[in-house]
Image 1 (cartoon, rainbow, N blue to C red):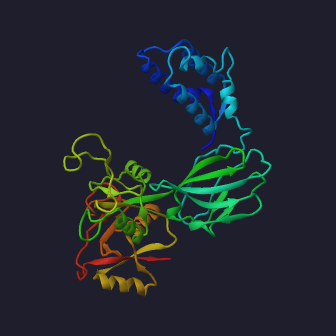
Image 2 (image 1 turned 90 degrees about the vertical axis):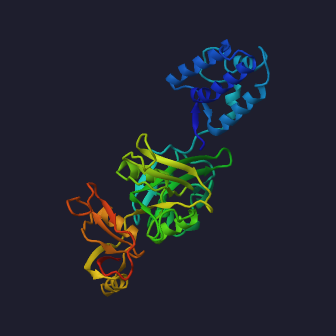
Length: 410
């Protein structure tokens, strides 16, 4: 992302490495020469005054190339000699080098909030505002896909006409609140819309961009199939979550769920392709001793390795309700159909528990053949655990007539 970086910011992350490397090459890594020290001290003083800027990512590249050309040189004519001429005296401006990277005015304003919160089904706005209009330009909105190292174009506009692409086609438009407004409006937000977005200004001189994160309110739930734990490769885990009205959770979503009380001893796939599990209560059979936290198996082979899944779901348009009885799985399906509904999915039940406070101390069939029940207010003889959550009886035999059913209707 192109931004205006102050001279001290660049100096602190670039010159540290340059100084250490050059002086190590000279056999005296403990000393910093007078020119280098002067520049370092001056950068700190200029940072306090707010003076001295250099042009964003282009400036970083120019300075890096400039330093790299001289890293192998030694003595007063080497790196130190060049540092001495990189802005001398008391000026806060870094001289010809920085001037070479300067490309003109900065058009995009930094966002007030870099994280935008929303819910599934809502209409949300990702702000992108110009400080002034370039003579001619285009704005391109794109989404950074997690774990895939690619950007997907969403919408391109020249200020007059706009065209949307991909999964957001027909749901994305420009807000156009005023002539400097390049904000993106997304209607009917879906689970897969969560992630990082980029608003890029293309003006033919120096492109700029700002990045924002769309974060959905939701709930993470662990999931495994009826045949037992550690059965999914990455792609099967992804499909399983989608079949249960969810999607694979991201690491950030799992971390937030852990802070809210998720404690689970089986490792599961995340959207990024890594495998983790959250531990609140440290115990020998769950990762051994140590501190509570997110345990990690790192990035695994998506086709070969097999684990459970951590799924994420959000609010829903419909409602979940319980039908009592002693029903088999097929009888449960029929009971829901008679009421104009369908068997609820696991994601439906978790969302109803999380967002609607569904509390029912009776096990009920779900669409995947499992039997579960939601507890919002823990109490004796109702699940046996002190914390709220969705309890599970596993996957009983479909012919077992012992449970009611949870239905879902739009």
